[in-house]
Amino acid sequence: MALDDQDAFVVAVAGHVESVIHKQPELALELFDRALVLNENSVFAWGMSGELCVPWRSGTGARTPPQRLAVVAIRSA
Image 1 (spheres, helix red, strand yellow):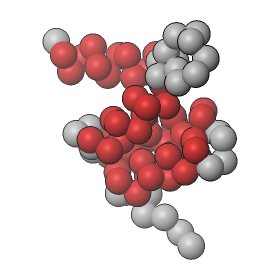
Image 2 (cartoon, rainbow, N blue to C red):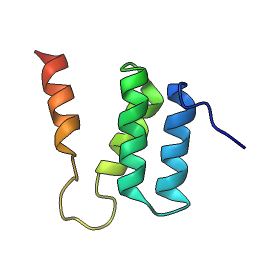
Image 3 (spheres, rainbow, N blue to C red):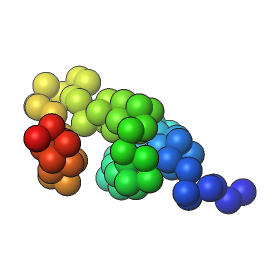
Image 4 (spheres, rainbow, N blue to C red):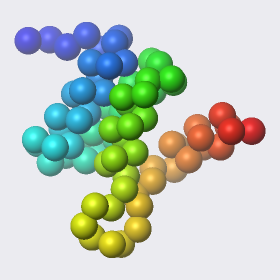
């Protein structure tokens, strides 16, 4: 089955699957970033990517990809 790689929601769901089921957080972040390029207002993509970057159990601090920080900084200016 092929995914619609131009649909931000579909790409974000694929990122969520990679993160939770396949345990591939780096690939998931790439997919979330792709979803946000397609639709910068995708609540699902922002929510799922934020969930991935927050440490749930480790207590070591949040993982925040540099490109996401730049996007947030530009939008909040």
